[in-house]
Every structure is written in C-alpha cells, then in structure tokens.
Image (cartoon, rainbow, N blue to C red):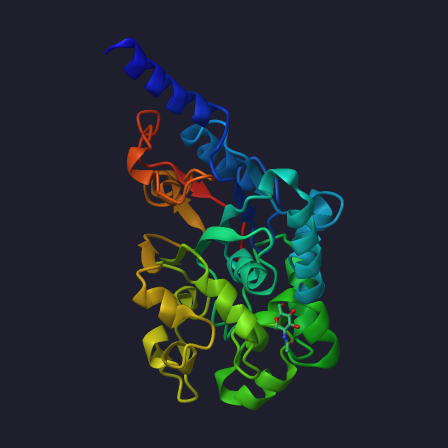
Amino acid sequence: MNFFTALFFLTIFANHVQGTYRPVVLWHGMGDNCCDDESMGKVQQVIKDALPGIYTYSIMLGDNEREDKKFSFFGNINDQLIKVCDLLKIDENLKYGFDAIGFSQGGQFLRAYVQRCNDPPVHNLITFGSQHSGISDLPGCEKGDGLCQLMRTIARRGVYSNYVRTHIIQAQYYKDPKILDIYLEKNIFLPDINNELFKNETYKTNLQSLNKLVLIRFTEDKTVVPKDSAWFSFYNSEGELLDLFHQPIYTEDWIGLKSLYENGKLEFKDCEGAHMQIPLEYLIQQVIPYLGSDIGDEEDYRDNILIEQNNNDGNTRLSLNIQI
Ligand SMILES: *[C@@H]1O[C@H](CO)[C@@H](O)[C@H](O)[C@H]1NC(C)=O
C-alpha cells in the first residue's frame, strides 16, 4: 500500500469517526420510557457499539422518565406529536435528517411524525410490532403496572366516549371493525393518519419520501390484536383478516404505501417470538444494516458496515419493558 492509498483509507476512516453517520431517533412503546438501561438504553448502546460515534436520540415527553411513561398511556397523541415535532426540530444534531425506529405504538406515532411534520426528514423508518391499522382489543397489563390498569379501567367507559377518546392514548388507535362508522367519526388519530376520511396529500407526499419503510411483525405476538396490524393487515366487518394489498388504503394509495411498494421501498419482515421480545442478534443483523448511511451521501453504506458479532452468544434476547 503506498502512501496515498493509506491516506485515502485514513480519510474515510476519519470521516466516520467524526460521526457522519445519519443519526437515529427512537420512540418507545406503552409502559416504557425513553431511557431505561434494559430497554431503549440498551437499544441505543447496541447501535453505538455497531456504529461508533453515531448520534442517537430517544424521545421523552415530560420532565423525567416517570412522566414519560405516564404519557404513553394518558394524553392526546395529536398534542404529543406537536411537542415531538418541536423537540426534533430544535435538536442541532438532527438537522440533516435521521433514521427512526418505532417500538410498538411508537411506530405508528413516528409514521405520523413523517406524515405531519418530517422536518427534519426521516430517511429509513423501521417499526417493530406496531399497530398501523389499529387494534381491535385493548392490550392487557403486566402484573403490578398501576398506570396500565388505570388506563384499562378508564377505557372501560367506552373507547369512543368523549373523555376516553381524547385522554387515553390506546383509544386513539382502537378500531372496532363492527362499528366502523363510529370509529371514523370519533377516533381522533388513526382515521386521520391513515387518510380514511379526508385525504391529506401532504401525508402521502411525506410518507412516499422515505427511503425505506420497514414493517416488522412478531410471529408469536399475543399482545397486539391482530398482530398483523404491524403489516397494515386488519379485519373487515365480517371479521376476516385482510392483508394490506386487499384494502383501499393500498389499492387507492391513500397514504403512499403503493408507491413505496412499487419502488421497492416497503419491506415486510418477521421477528420470531412474542411482542417486543427482540433477539439481540436480530437487532444487530436485521436492523443495524438500515442505519448508519452517510448523511452527506445518499449512497447506502450498509454493505461496507462491519458488524461485530463475536461478543454475542446469539441467544441473548432483549426483553423490552414495552407492553404495546
Ligand atoms: C394536511 O396535513 C398537513 C401536515 O400536517 C397540515 O399542515 C394541513 O393543514 C393538512 N391539511 C388539511 C386540509 O387538513
């Protein structure tokens, strides 16, 4: 290797060390918070180990982790999204855009960020076990989770009743296929971001601008009903599960999914296991490759990324705190 070749490699290396990797934004699920060492903290660590110097940002609402968890059950997601759009916009490190990973409900919320704000813009959006087409059953609670039990107690008044529909986050993506007209009229979030009534062209333009939309479903998911909501499948009024390709949101391209698919930008993946039990190996092998492209260069770097797998026994499973 002559001097100039050496210098060339050194330059590439130096570039990466200085952190030209595209940053990554995470949004956690219900019952979790931004920063727990065993959950979002762990995910951030895995990303930083694979892509040294990368900037990661884990969304937190409220002033601390406890409040952040509370906001995953209670509030108005439309207001929360306005707040998140502000938070991401003022962060200097994100100004050239970022990749995003949404966990469970955090996935459809990040999709809403793309559709409504996308400033700074998202490059790749990856969602894990999200409820893109809604849920037809409220999620159960883990033993001892008082906030979750309170959410369920309040929701029992009726998910589309006046108080619940604007104060309980899970009601805002609850879709009862037997009373679609009530859902369309009363639900304050999901019919809007899925363009089920009014067709907002900005939503479509923004979603279509993604480089990749990666939808990951958990094969043994018993928390999300139906688990295939992660892939945009949902029940019709007869209770039959329809995949995305047999619904008007796709055939009439309400939000840009058809365009994404036809351009090879919509991917469907399965992760073996229960809801939010993510094997560390899966995260490293299947998700990291979507991250870390160079911000100044649209060319994808993923083939060049060396993924260190030696310090991982292959069986480690990230058991995230997230319930949905
Ligand atoms: C469509 O969505 C954009 C982005 O959120 C918003 O600014 C605009 O007001 C919406 N259009 C209508 C007609 O609601």
